[in-house]
Image (cartoon, rainbow, N blue to C red; front, side, top):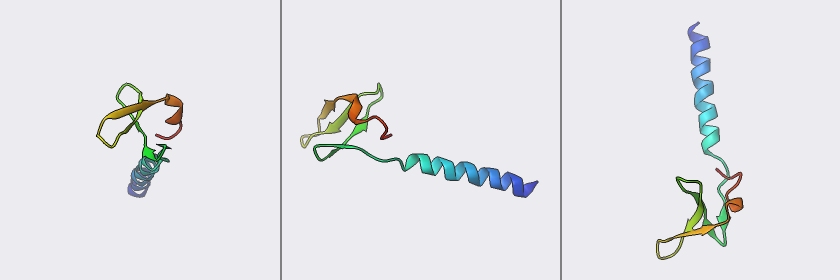
Length: 61
């Protein structure tokens, strides 16, 4: 029973790590981020959020 519980815990830990290593996306050399409301943006050299079409972020996070 202890082995089964340990296997389940390890399986959950491994799966959660794999989901965090998804591909990141970029736009014109800038790393893209997804905002709280689902917007897709990158940080400009001045530190401002520059929004791009959401399609650039689909499947990346």
